[in-house]
Image 1 (cartoon, one colour):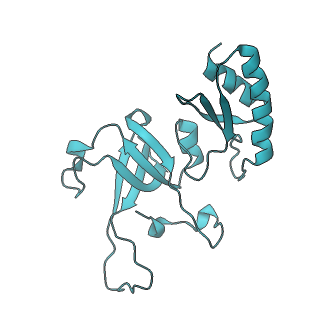
Image 2 (spheres, rainbow, N blue to C red):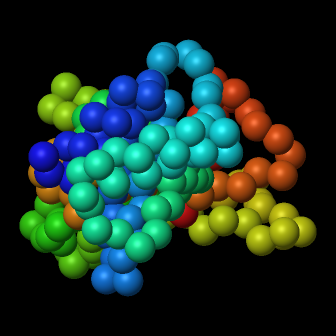
Image 3 (cartoon, rainbow, N blue to C red):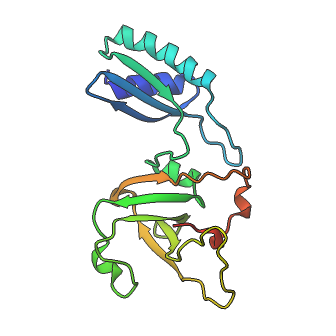
Length: 193
């Protein structure tokens, strides 16, 4: 049985979701897990979850004869990778960092976006054609800087994409020391670069 299948079967058998597997040249086997998504519920992986999966994987990998020197099981973190359509559905409305496989090219004509641009940060939204990311090129106000009320905000821009056009997509690591805000309080005025 292949390594990916073995790990995925073990992780899902314990009630978790496999996010990623990474093998390094030094023998490190890094497994990233998450709790299965249930709409409306915010759940987080803790140390006990990682410990439980680690113990079971050590046993299974020994039985399967998988060669590794160190096993690391962790949560996806604040910059969680988005790989499947299910991941995109789960994090719809969130701020993401998106890197395309190829520059946008001719699609940029007349939009003010450079034709060789491949990286974007914006809100993830579903459309009839698939997915899009919304962003504004307005610079963030510096701390203590007053913003004129007469200044017009930069327009929102949108880029539609399909999953096969993506080189990498991740949740944007946004740290808010004032505490968690519910998703409904986020709006397009808070789009960050």
